[in-house]
Image (cartoon, rainbow, N blue to C red; front, side, top):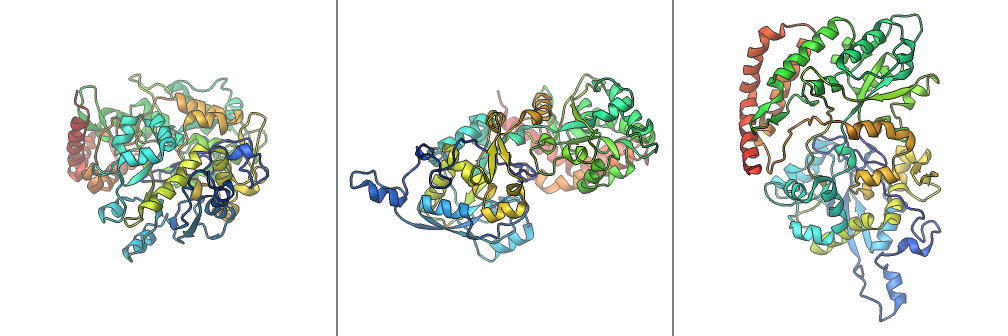
Length: 544
């Protein structure tokens, strides 16, 4: 899941990770004719220092530095414009020359080959797992004290979203600091479930479903009562309908989650009674014909194509994807084709044991923001840190770097909310201007986003998300360290659980008869080792 303007980014297993926007009223003076006040708090440029005379404070950027830069942009395209206006702006302000490394930072093979050939960079921000670089000794170690001292505003935002203790623990890799941590509000927001309210009206249901039984009834009528009024039997209740259903049985959206109970005992969620009962419900609903059978194998492109063409009426995704301000959003995707269509968002419903919740996110932790090559000089580290810290400390400069000039890249609505211009929402334009996350990656809190990014029209999806109980996709507890057994066996146990789920939902097996054999297969495939190691990590990090 990716975001232009809000920054959902795929890091480790993220989509979203995520860079946010910071609002301003005027753009940086000298860039778009803004007032001098726009640059208050900025360190002087070399030219400005020369004019200030001998009494001026020493210019921290007097020495020109040459920086190599591997950036990640959420457009899915490597920045191939090597002399963009944004790069020139940063170069002039901070007295640097930036050499962009032409590397597809989302292509793991290409990234591995680049570093295997002995190449590196000063600024490194990738969209593939970074641990291999640390394990090979290719990144520069930094103390947390140095990071916090050089980037106080940046770290204030990370701490605000995680708490300082969690941030300090989770920004480490094998007990040491190698990267500047990143976090965005979107990574703290569970997914939501949307439905076609116009279909609900057409099938005679007066209110949004609030219980599992009511939800079941919606699926039935969306399947059999011709909700689109085209006279054909060509719709299903949903495609990927299980987000809140899993939550109603105490599950997150992943089959490799391990939860600690109230006594501190860690167990695999996939072996819980809740998972078994969820499978029985899904099997029954599929037998009724309420679920598109292709949903068991469809990928996201196929799912969205069917949503757009009105083949089903319930869809789960991150709230950002439903926001009208998001390019190619899931709301306009439907309403642009059908003026009568209406999208509304339902809250998680309660299951048979009283549980409820929404999944889609990991337990909060500090993610990889950017790092430095092992041999990057201290002067270059300090300069890069200064650039990134200034993006957080000075709203005007950030806005110019992330969105372009006011009036061209963005406008502000009557509430002061950022509105991207259509041209600057396009991938080619983003790369041409050098805007968005490639240079402008920064952490953004939900409070800031509510004030500057989220329009009133987009609020409903976010409001449901932020009020939902969360069922995490990995663990429900904090810990320090890495579960090496999960790294080793994660794919194997996921395969075992997913195959069992797929066959169970499709009605190809008797869940009760096969349950004990499935549990043994899961544990033997590595589940036991993963569980044991999580228990040790929990005990070490949660002693009272």
